[in-house]
Image (cartoon, rainbow, N blue to C red; front, side, top):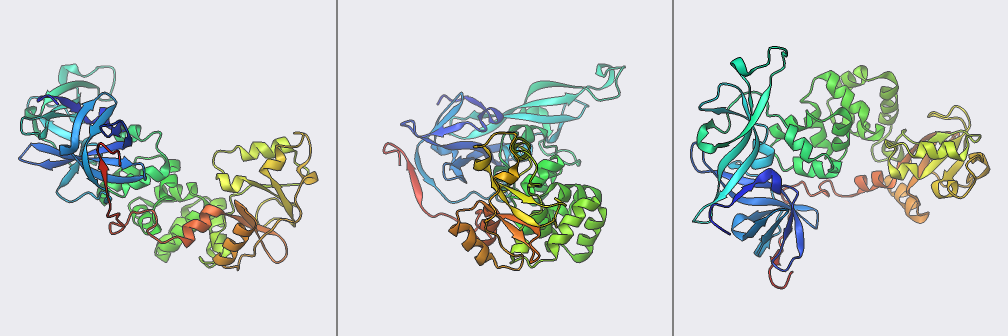
Length: 432
C-alpha cells in the first residue's frame, strides 16, 4: 500500500475481510487504538467477526490492502476471542459521537468519523477527523432554539483533546451502524466493552430493542445493567421482555428492588411475571412463558394465522396455536389441544381451528423437571410444548430455546474471557 493512504474507519466497518486468494474470513467490527502521546493514537489492529461468529483481533501488520468495500490480509491469525484491555481504545465504540474540544472553535464538536493514515514505518495513525460542530454566535439561527450543526474534516492537530467533555458519550452513529444487527450480535459486541460504555449505549436503545438485547445477555449482566436506570425506565424495559425472561431477571435482583419494579410495572404485565416467580427456576413452571397464542375453538384459520404473524411472538412459540375453552388467558379454561402451524396452512381460511385441533397433544406439568421437558421435546420433535395444571388448564408454554438456555453452560455464549479457542488459522496461499 502507498504511504499516505487514508482509511476512514466508519466506511470500513462491516466490510468483508479476505485472504489473498479471495476467501472471505469475516467482517470488520472496530479498530483498536493505542495512545502514543497527548493527542496521538496509533491503530494496532482490527476487531473482526470471523465466520465462527467470534470476534478476534487482527493486527494491522497483517493488512495487505485497503480497498472500497474490502480489506485483504495475510499471515497467521490467532483465534483467541478479543477482549478489550484497559489501555486500548476502540475507534467506533469509544470515540464516535464523543465530544471533543477544538483549538479554533467555540461550539461543541463531536466526532463522526476517523481517518487513519499509513506511515512510512507501517503504522496507521489518526490524522484527520470528520466532525460536526455546533454553530455559535451569528451562525446560529434566530428562528430556532435547537442547536444547529455543520460538518467539516479537520486535522488531528486542530483538536485539544480527543476525550474532552464530561457529558455521557452519545451512541447515535454506533446505533445507526447496528440498525440491522440481530440482538444476539449486539449483545456479543457489548460484552466486549467496558461496563460504563455498555450502560451508555443500552441506555440509548428503545425499550423494545433494549429488552431484546437484554434477553441475549447473561442474567448476572442483565441485573447489573437494570440497576443503572431509574425505576420508571427499568420497569418499562422489564415490561418489554418476554415474561419468562423478566421473571428470571427479577429473581436475580435483591428482593426489595424486585418488588419495587413489580409495583411500578403495568398490573397485567406484573401479574404474568408474579405468576412465573412462584415456580422453581429448574422446573417447567420456571421455564414457561405466558406470552403464547391461545385461542378459542371457534376462531377461524385465517384469524389464527393473523395471530401467528405478530412480530413479537417468538417463532418457536408461534409454531403452536393453543386451543382452550374460555377464558383464553392463563390460567385458561379447559385445555382442548393444539393446532399446528403447518396444519393451518393446509385447510381453508374460513374453517374453525376446533375442527383441526390435535387433542392428543403432549404436555408437561409445571413441577416437571427440565430433564423431563427436554425428553418430551426431543421424543416428539416439538419446537414448543404446553404446560398444564392438574385440572387440565393451560398455564403457559415452553419453547426449545428456553430449554437450551437453561441446560447449556452459563458461559455458552462465549462472553467469559477464559472461554478461548487456542488454534490459529492461516490466512495465506492455502486458504486455511
